[in-house]
Length: 238
Image 1 (cartoon, rainbow, N blue to C red):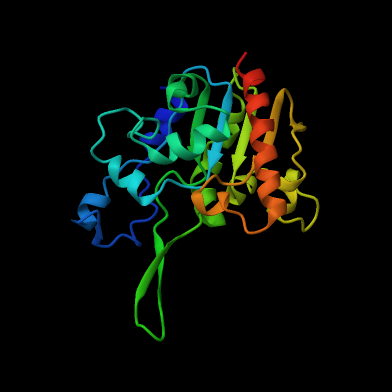
Image 2: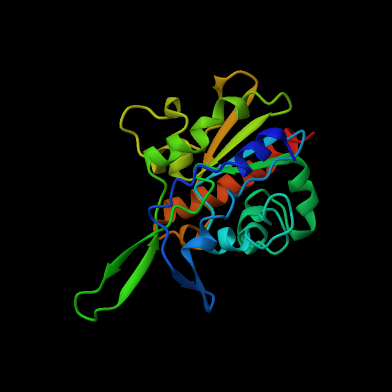
């Protein structure tokens, strides 16, 4: 594992300790004391060609990281359904190409620990629902912002893929004025004028919710982005 990945993985700041609570997931009650010791999820090969920055690990991925024997907490494994079913296809890859992904892609999140959830109550039914929190500016500042300069100086790096709006916040130079993330992605523009020698490409987050775009424009853009990313990735790893 890359030294920077090890450094992130061994972070013990426990930024979300005030949010931890006993929670039921997958028919198990996770106690605060159990959750408190789970490590950040990050993966980095020795000589990465591509830095992939996404939002944050899911609750399932983060909890699974507690019991995984792999150095990355099982983030880049065949058991990670999001990786195999959603993320690899965005790069033009499949499950059989997992080793190619592992060799070339440094995968970090703007927030490498699960940033917890928010609860809301339906006024009529009284039903409580949970929604994942997006990493906030302060959370990003306390997390990946502390390592981003070191990451972008990795000698072998050819490209950075920013998956989701929180990742784009790390590079404010990408946006023009009050431009929204959706507008930025719709440009389908590979930027090479921000960091010398490194291409930067913002893409939609490849969650199932995002892949079923209601707007036909976003649906078409996402399909074109996949073709662009597939072709660029082949060149980045040569």
